[in-house]
Amino acid sequence: MGDTQDWAAGPGAAERARSVLAAAWSCAVTAEGAREEYVGAHAVTEDGGVLLEVPEDSALFAAALCAPRGEPSAVLEFADVAPVPVRQRIRARLWLAGWFSRAADGSLLLRPTRVVLRRPSGAVLVDLDEFTAARPDPLTDAEAGLLTHLADAHPDAVERLTRLVRPGSLHAATRVTPLAVDRHGLTLRIERTRAHGDVRLPFHTPADDVTQLTERMHALLAQAATTTCPRALQRHRADDDS
Image: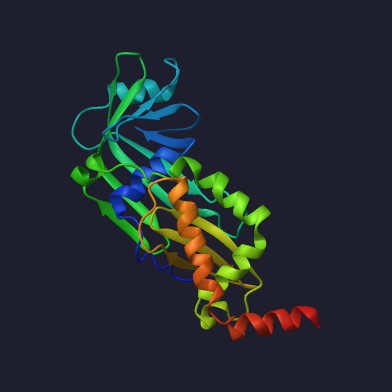
């Protein structure tokens, strides 16, 4: 079981939902009892609609276009998966409910009428106007590469960043891994033998691109350099060395 994650100084629900949608490579689609999964088959419109390429002879295609109007006739589900291997890698789930129509290019177009985002802190109904107007976090496309590089090439930097974590959050920690990064801050996953928790390190100001992110990370490391190493982590290291 994971601890409740602290999303202070993080993206709002609408921005987070658009980021999940922008980064997702696959989705599950349910329409009139038919459920299918697609990989690399969808695109996102400027206002948050989803274009889905579906074979015309599929059950989903017929169910989507023949469904009566009224209640939303289709639900699309997207998962936000951490790019770095950790326990419970799904960081968020996003559900879009609405109707399908046929786009000019023959694909199916879903216009959301209901948007639900579930994060470790709980589920929230996203305001449709805010969802339509929001844009994905500017670091969304680069996040996977940034996190894997940080974890694989700079484990020493990750260790130094734990100096910014409250000692109590590091109690019995067995591993600390970068879990997420956005323009507002970096999230670390703290794993223990039978549990885990997430700790957020906010940037002093948002980063709008990778260059600014590099500066924000250097600022966190500089702050960590002036902070005493937490006793909990020191005890853990001593146990490892014994």
